[in-house]
Image (tube, rainbow, N blue to C red; front, side, top):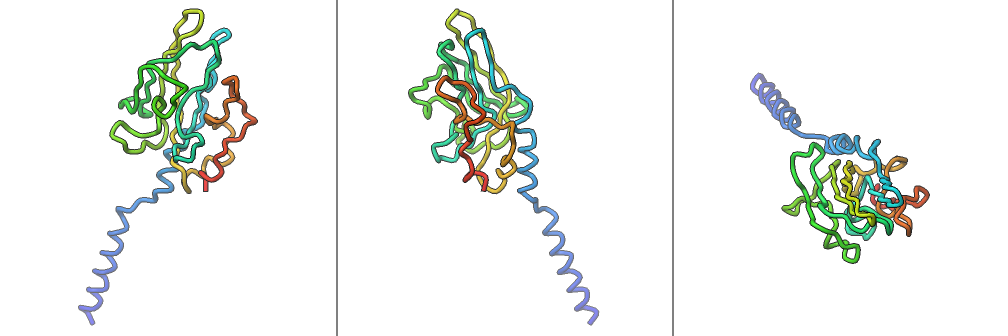
Amino acid sequence: MKHSLVFIAFLLMLNLSSCVGQKDTTTTTNKVYESCCGVEPVEFTFGDAYMFVPNVFTPNGDGINDYFVPAVNDDVLAFDAYLIYTAVGDTLLFDRNGFSYQNIPSWAWDGNRKDGTPYIGPFKYEFVVFLKNNIIYTVKGSACRVACGPDASVFTGKTTCFYPIQADTSGRLNKSLPSQELDCFK
């Protein structure tokens, strides 16, 4: 009987110790997303020139909000030095010299690191913007790459999240346009 109690106690301790290293990934991912859709500006005006930069995107291959790309009006000639960094700015995730709106999948960031693995959570961006009046600006800010699924449900109802699809035909942010991401947040 004594050996049976020792054996049961041993099994119980073994079982409890195997739970110590497990993480609740939902809680961990939700914490990653806490700083998303914060106070960073998403609209930049330079005289008549205008740029809307989404602060969240969902690259899941559904054709909606799959690429991180700013919208501009006709007074912005181009943007260059398109750089994406980790949230702390210590690692370059993506870079492009130049940009083509005619071929967004080849030029815009798809949410993956340079090695092809998905990046999830907040990140920093930087663009050099060329205007018609020969003025050059650097635009910097923060945004968030969201992995669709149950963890993304924290974005349901957030009113400060603005998606690429919310740019109207003039390149301006239209907050009344829906994100079209209901399936992403399930």
